[in-house]
Length: 482
Image (tube, rainbow, N blue to C red; front, top):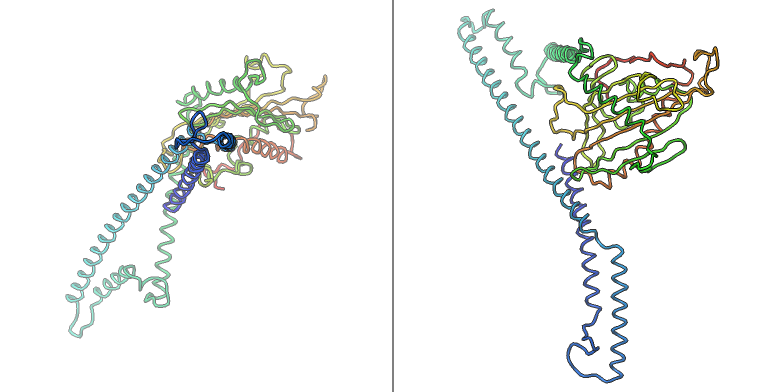
């Protein structure tokens, strides 16, 4: 609302004031240097032109050296913290752009409210005219159906009572309160009628939701999205299995903790940070299928994803491919984000050419690939900044020690399961958040996310039968809220 946008404007104002203070301190330092450096000629003669003696010349020379030393000290002191004018200028431009965008949003909100009030006023005026017409009609009927004693006839009385029931909704005297003129029976009828109407609206919305979110009846191969889903999944699998430590690699290690290592490549497009990130990790006690199922399945996502406010399944390409709408919790003063993307779960065959060069060979390999898409049920209406993402989550199960002759997976324990995890993300957050802020957030949040999610799956799987496949969605709701 407008209060949130005004709070954002206050934040932008604080940023501008800080920039002005920084620039002012720098220019004050330059002024101090100028004032403390006396103006002298090359021969040491003062600028006023008077002759001085040899003793005065020596004193003036000493003062000049002190002034020069003072100037150097001040320049060194303030030079180390000199303003990055290019960075300040870019930040200033981004801040002012944010202010303009926020003001435009405020104007749009006010226009929308004004239009809503206009429509509401028009409806109220129409309702008033209808009530006035009914009142006139009732008065006319009363006059024409009154008997000689001044009592209304039976038919007119019934119509008048019906008209009175209609008029009961016309003013504040017919609302809840100590001075309400409504009787208990009329009050109950009004509440019951409203509740019935609300129930009908809920049932209607549910029918629409079921019709809209009905699973696709056509096979996935015939879906228009399938060629892209197939190609992106193969591409992301090869991308994930690339060696980040190979010679000539541009990946930079930015976080490491135990078996977990996180790499990134610094990429900016039109001033927007789009750093690809890759996380490598190893977990004991779970299978690759258990790991990817909990990552993909919507009915457990709120158990480990702490940044979500709402999750909706917009469509179903097939049983292993869903289209999601995710609305993320707003972190003030950053604008709220949402994302619409398809997510595909697949087991990779051990005969796949992409796995041919891998040594040692895994027992099985699973992948979840996701990419942003468009969907008619969730157009980008500007209420949230829409994220553009491409994400893949690859897991491989290794059994250590390997299965002996005659041994099957049915007899092993979880202590022999070792799962290699590769998480790759390429996210364009949109908006205008400064690059330094985004990179600081990535450095802090990515390790926390990987640790939190892997530990969640380990705890969730402990004490349950080992699942190399077959896990399915339990809760088939279409909308989840945090």
